[in-house]
Amino acid sequence: MLSSGTLGARLAVLRDIVAQPRRPLALGPWGGEDFVDLLIRLIPTSQGVLRQTLTLCLMSYQDPRTTRFLSEAFATSRDAATVLHLGQRLSIEQGLEFFLPFLWGDKAAQALAAARICREAGDLELKDRLRVALLLDRESEPPSLEDVSLPAWLFELSGPHRARARSLAEKQPEGMMLLWSAWDRLPDEGRAWLVDFTYRQNPVRARKEIELLLAAGCSAPRVVETACRLGLSLPEQLLEHPDPAVRARAIASGLADSQLERYLTPETSLAEVRAATRRCGPERLLSLMTDPRWPVRSEAVSALVLCQPRPLARVRRMVRSEELTTRVAAVELLRRWEDFKWLEKTLLASETETGRVRASRRSEASAPREPGTWPGSNS
Image 1 (tube, rainbow, N blue to C red):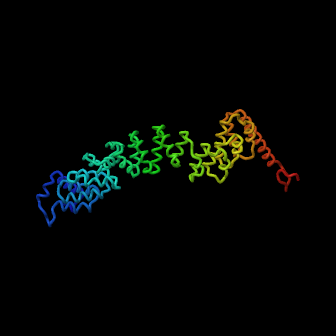
Image 2: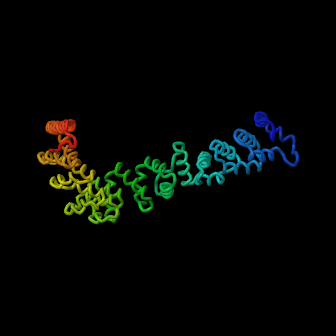
Image 3: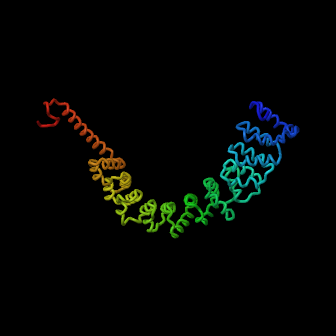
């Protein structure tokens, strides 16, 4: 019946067997095969609900053959629900030594099932406890971040579960400060995260650590950025750093004030040009409003907004420039200065004049003319 027949009939038989699993065994072997052998033979060639029900039926039998088959199925199955059921069943016979390796594998379903089983065991090493906490999210508490657990935390902060590890570590602000002693063992993104967290939670400690890093020659972009936020002095050699973002930070801090023109050339990176623009005086800013690069014009406008006294007359003259980009920049600056009455009067007058010119051209184009002449000719 289990080898043939309709799906409904086979499922009905299997349900009856699950309710009374000893009955098939009482029939004894047939053809050198008992019922456990039959189930093990049928499961690999079955699919869907039939395969699941056959597997459920096999779980009813405590037998070395059952354990071997279910262990292999647990390791290879791709269905999360099936893996979870198999894990629960195998926990009756298999110990931690079977499940622990799955915590460190790359199969998510097996790792999650193993984590739930290992959590119940209780007696785990620090590294296993931390991995279980990472896998089970809020269901399990991680070990405290302290000297004895630091190696385990550092491993996870560099591994595939690093985002979750950071989240758990941030719940231990005091323990987080221990990570500064392991700066060299953190990946670049982990260092940036540590700098950001310390800046938010403990600015005094952040200042101390950033000063030490700068003195040791560290020029990581996040370190330099945070140093600027803290108002720390940057070393002049950062102007020659290979990363334009770092050079831009150095320029923004004032290290290049005596040589700003060097960083305003077309060959310079946009980050450096923008930083240098913000350090320029009013005269240079006015000239930069005509720069062909729109981010430079934008930075110049933003810097001039705060300029006192305002070069109002000169900017108004720029509204009449022949270059559209210059006119747009000048209008934007006047708008931010709230010079609305002058803008309204000037722009309306310009629009009126443009309308007159267009009307004149239309009139000229439609006027009667002698054959062989062009509009506007004197012949």
